[in-house]
Length: 444
Image (cartoon, rainbow, N blue to C red):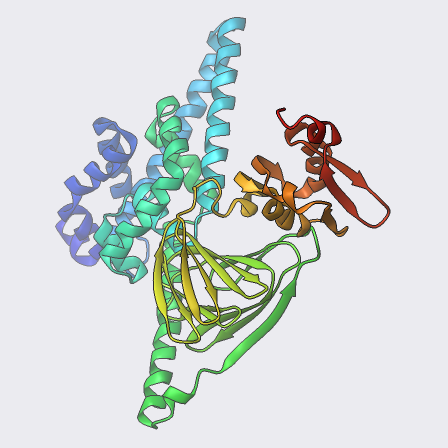
């Protein structure tokens, strides 16, 4: 064995880290005897197959081989058990029904987890997979992705806030290993994530080198060329989502238009009209949105920007942004805070209700004691026909509730059952008037 270990560094590493490998398998599969069996199989595999050394530490490769071997052994054992049960056991109809329900529930839970994890921002998703599914420590995750440990903690907090309700529900129904295995099969592997991170580091290195060369020539401060520019628009009643190459997402609301510029050192958006939401992926390039004499700089967040007739409205769902007017005024906004920028001035708005903030992204119009004139202004954005109020006084009526932005017609149909108004639809306009019965009986 000593001669083999001298000729095969991987075998030497296995001998030195034998107990650590056993503990790695035990933590993931929950059985120490099984863990010893797996590591023994790894030893046999290394001696017979003599796998080629790869980039990275021998311990990382051995952990990967151990995990694969454990999964193979577990699958083989499950197959034998299923065959034996099918031969020896007389099926119990009620028990079979229960097993089927549990299998279905387990699949539904894994499907739900996969959907939530897939919707996470790319870097956040990678941190979760490496830490929770690959069981790397936070320091190992930081090293693999080339980010700070503080950013790993931040990404995990964001991931768990989205995943926790489904994750804990799944853990109550199926074991940790049984949950991780199907999830790991559906999501990117740790190896592919590491390769992607390595490629990103190369790109960042090239960009940094280019910046340094330009700086040395004294022209870097002038140069931020755009290498990709596109313009995207939506029609009245239509919404759309754009996914950028770096994983950032831009959500366009109804009747909106945005120009997207990918530059060497920055990502610049110009909201030409309407409203857009931004879910920003963290890279070395800054993310800036310009709208109606207002500049919004991302600090690490999810936020909305809406063009208005005389300015722009900015609201934040997660993280923080800096909002700056063209007169130089600046404010930092945190989650559920909003500001109105007009005439070079920044006016802080009341903090937003979490349900109201970004409701349009969920396909909803949300009103909470909103004056009818303001509610009509929001409805109008999703309807081609003009909506008119016959009397300014009914604009003071208050409307509450959550409604589907895809069916403003339905909201107009039920409006007379909510408020003392009538709704008349003509060929070209919709007119909302005071209910004559209510006008004659003001006490009602």
